[in-house]
Length: 154
Image (cartoon, rainbow, N blue to C red; front, top):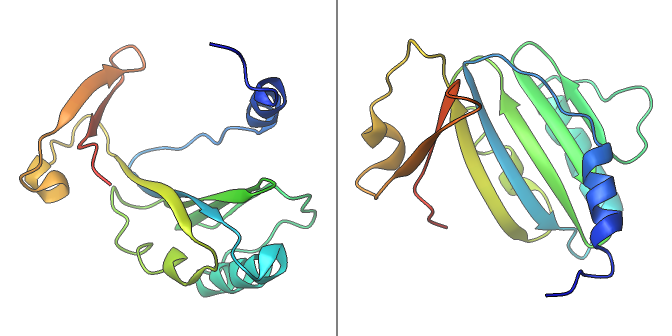
């Protein structure tokens, strides 16, 4: 297998972004989407409306990528040439119930997405609440500090 011509550029771009540190309980929605017919301008307008709806202030300086938060929500936006990624954080619960309708009004087409839930070790969630009757695969991660569970369905 050969390396893609843009592999190094993409790897450097991904690793140049800062990582946020969070505390549980936390829920997040992460999506990758195309810009759609309105392009980055239409998306920018829609992102400003989303931030207004959840009372999150845009950082004073924005050079494409940004992360902003308040006590209840966080928003991470990363533009790329043909698509963008957006992560919405619900900072006060291992849930995304307050996030679900926020991203669906954004322009473009969904490429992929994932919901993640983080809860402290004292919490033993009922897996049926999250996965219903789907088969679940999981592993301990971060040296046993956490568990990751997934149903691997679209």
